[in-house]
Image 1: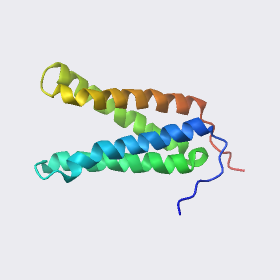
Image 2 (image 1 turned 30 degrees about the horizontal axis):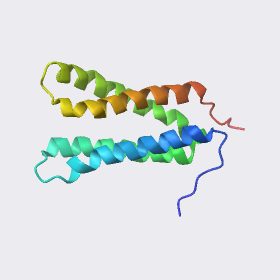
Image 3 (image 1 turned 60 degrees about the horizontal axis):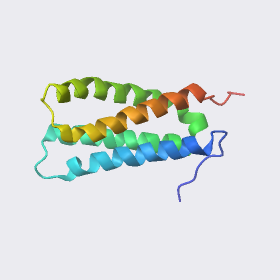
Length: 123
């Protein structure tokens, strides 16, 4: 059984982190298992899914692992910085736009969480 550590973090933040985990895993699965997907796209999908696992782990222990979410912020900003110009230049399909919107919204949510985040003291 998966257990969650007792937390001082508001339940809404925990649900947001769980939603981010589910989102990443759901985005990753189709390309990860589609037979026509290139190896490089499968690797990207694997990494997206791994970030989903990280978000799930943070949701289970947000007071202890919350600062790890900076990796998600940097990753999502990087994805947006690379892919939005490619979509605007016509090099990527408009079909990716809903995923980019989701990444942008989770980036803002992660930043809001991190601004409110207070790590556990080491005493």
